Length: 144
Image (cartoon, helix red, strand yellow):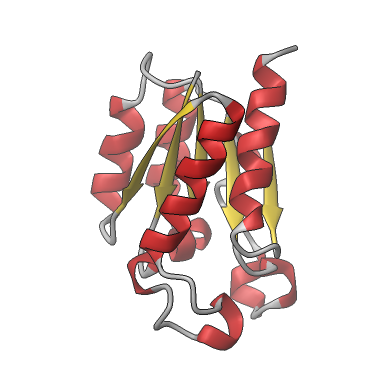
């Protein structure tokens, strides 16, 4: 089983960006933690980060027939990107939307996800654990 973990814009600034909301963990730290977790589960993961919407769309499209699931933190594109939503729909790969913060307790514009409707689920508000919960959910879905 292989899971693709995609991080969107500004996630490369983890550890610097709003530490009161996102903590001090860097993206590298997060990726190391997820690789260690995937080893515990006996699965493969691939990580990807981009600040560019088109690159995220292309990565989702390239995943077609190559991965069993996608964990997607589209970050700000969550609230604006029909293109990412359409890419998820087009590949028909089980996808879990994740956010480190609880988007439903933030600004009004962050409370609406254009992506959630084409995902198996959404996990938000648990920091780095959101990713682990999503990976575990995808593994559970595949084992049914």
